[in-house]
Image (cartoon, rainbow, N blue to C red; front, side, top):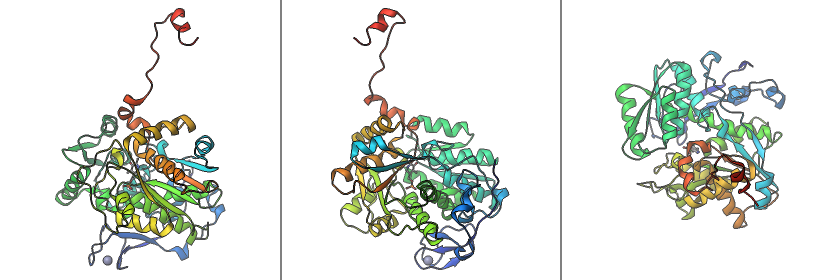
Length: 412
Ligand SMILES: *Cc1c(COP(=O)(O)O)cnc(C)c1O
Ligand SMILES: [Zn+2]
């Protein structure tokens, strides 16, 4: 196992709107304008070259200078990140794209990209001296936080809508976390979690340490750049729930650009949602700046069913600023996309991961993508998390008696 050598160049927290700076403590919003706070680094002091990474750990911690955890001994690493970037020749040729890649984050330790932010957030909780952690979750963050909390020997409480998939609940329970199954939507669960963090002082990471938590997700951009041979793609397509992932990936490319590791000025960032919960796509399509929340999300893509996305406004800014789009796909198209990716590339994604494939298909059909562009689709979660949605639409197994005659009946 490689050790984590160089540590963080995190300098401060800075308000995204008014620019006011704060020391890197456990803060969430600016006290003058209530806008979100971002971690800022001492970029001028960071000395990184492409060679710096040659002997580093194969996890998000290879980028420790650009993560907000100060000391190596605080790091809780169960192997998040450094997932495969696969050239998708079969899917690409079906769609008419020559340079399509899948960033396969379904193979993280708890089977979604949420291990990236969870690893950072739980490491940061260790630095803050917290004993109780948790989150509000649509399912995947719950598993990621629960697993990292288990490894760090911390108590863990997760708040999730009651009707998420049974496999997700089983996974979280197996890690030993306490599950608060809220009779309501994700936004209801999140509101309750905010109150719980105030009443009990728990570090519910996507709320109480959000500026740090989101930093983990930008490592997808770092890895993609590295795996493409130190360059940015022309276009990247990302599923949107709160919008934190999309904004983080965009920031990741900008940071590598700022450090002179790649040129990323031209990368187009596009987002994907499910039609049954598409507040950001709706705003994009109607040219609105403000997001109108969805009261009751209704989609099989439960992992991205957030009706009131906290970073929606910033997603629109990034997408419009880079020349991307935000699209949405219906549940039928999501199921088709799950099967298409599985049949062409051997990658089995959950419903939330398949929206990027669906939106890519729409862009190709609409002539909005050049066949030669280097396109990366982020596949963010594993198909085994949502099998119950798929079951009604897949071919039935061929059932046989265990005899030779029966075997001969399969095919003439
Ligand atoms: C959470 C999640 C997302 C999107 O996350 P946000 O950062 O909230 O936009 C995408 N895909 C999967 C599978 C997720 O679990
Ligand atoms: Zn401010």
